[in-house]
Image (cartoon, rainbow, N blue to C red):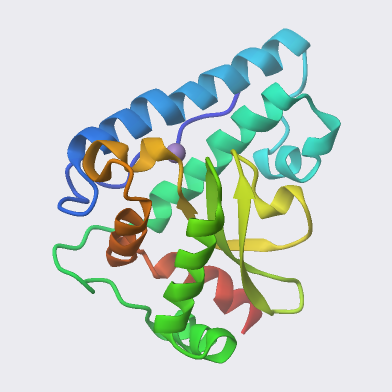
Length: 201
Ligand code: MN3
């Protein structure tokens, strides 16, 4: 059976940008909910619990129920590790290889952020915005609906993912998705993409 990733910080650690109650509900209700539903369905169907990445990359072979819950489980398992506490605006700025590749592929950190914001704005309804790396080392930004992710569509690795479901921000930001997206840049754990980028460069 699939197991939860432990939250690598306290529920309150991402304040003031993400509030304690949102983290509590997001982790315990939404994330653990996807996990429970996924395990229940796998058990019911007598499927083997193959490595989650294998399930994700062959997801078209499964029902929508498995797709949504496997995606929800996998995406959030990554998402918790992609965030890192910071108390101030610009507390976590790109460092090392992330900084170099962002400048190479997007011109500057500012235009990288702008591109992510535009994708987040464009995503009608629930979904995610992703920074991904292709097998040839090229990086790009895409958005996906619901709990889909780019690895369900084509061969790539995920460098960063931003959850733009309302449950990720509504308690604090209400309908202002863009204020949330703007603030989440303060919380990026750049060690996460750096580790992946270091395999390519
Ligand atoms: Mn979520």
